Image (cartoon, rainbow, N blue to C red; front, top):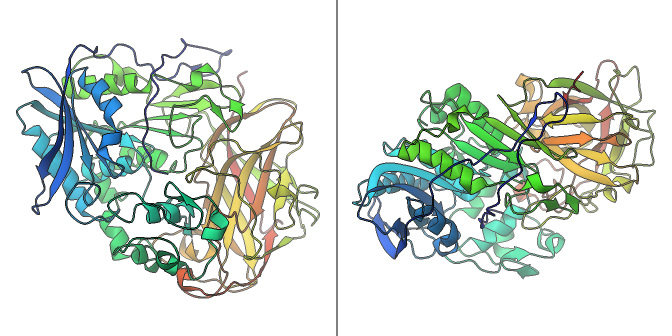
Length: 605
């Protein structure tokens, strides 16, 4: 979920090189402002917004008469939980201002997670901070998850005093990730909506503990979905039903808070340093914003963004072990040191060489080393098509499905039955996040999962970057979901989840080759084959070692991570009151060559 947390402060190992590969050190903190100040705390002050609402803030500043640059964090998770990081930065010559979001905890106003007032609040806070007697006039921002959203929302308002931002695991707009993942509602947003539906966190449903449902399948079982505010302990609010009723990004509610448009990016004048993890449930925002700022950023500095991607889930840089896999000592970096070096340059004007660093750092799992490179995707990437192949018997891992770089001939379509009453089980997840390379071999034993494997590799195959798929598929219903997963199959039979792409059929855009369109719906005809072009929202950076195989799985559900599609013809499935069984077909023949495109990094000569 969108919870912040303490960052672990460790120094990483020195540079490591393997042969002539572009394997390099992680982002190096180098020298940054020392901790030399006592810290003065001012708690529960008021900051005025343009509409008269007062937001509650905590201020942490150096005990000195001088003026210092400031760093802002806006959070809906209680500003009192963000103290350690604030004190660390304040001791190094920054004023840190932590703010409770509008309508949360002691801040005034009405809480709506996606109210456009969060944009203007961000502007007003930056300019108010810059005018204070302890501020030098330069302001930066940082923060995890929802606080990444607030940074982008604020930056699109172009406050003059804002000089740099550090959006950490920032989600993208709301139909690309959460609450809708390419049009499919992610279940953990049900938990989040309930537990944050009031000013204070609270229990929100069957089996709920700490605000999140333990017995998720029971919690998500009821229809219609729009009534979750009644069947679960949601507090009265004005926004939950808008989430369900406005089921395209073109709805007025979603347009008002959107930031990922060329026009919005052009208003961002400041440089950005972003970070995410391969298993972060909000991963798409980081590379999407990187590419968009390079193209649309509103200044020369803004058009040179930086990204860091490590082997983490949503709470970045805390553990070197994820789902039982140890990624080694380089999996933990001195992230806050790097952020301080970034702010030292942009807020204090210290010429520390940070702009000479490579703009992209990615951690390669399996090799457990970093790549430092000039762009994303990696410039040397060879995008390689892997075609789905079979003799028509590919249901479960016991079938004969194969994944080949050779295109198919006239092959028989593969079929499975998707029954919403008996959905494909998802990997275990905590607070919304599949927190590492989970073994998902159990789901691959079912007949409602199609499985395609490469031959066993005799050499390492490195795959780093964005993944796309082209599925030629048909369903017996008026709507359904398509889900495709990338898996690393070990010699001992473990099948470790790495990434996935999903698409709701009604979001297929027939005018753009079957790509996802968040802005409109396009209902399909039963039993009619269509092409679905799916961008994996969770790509990967992984070495498939010698002796391993690449696996692709296809299903129409992955529950309870995703809310089930009832397969019915209602324009808004949130209003559906019954389920319908769907008969599914995946085509792979000369005319309809279903395939995935993997970003293969060539081995050095």
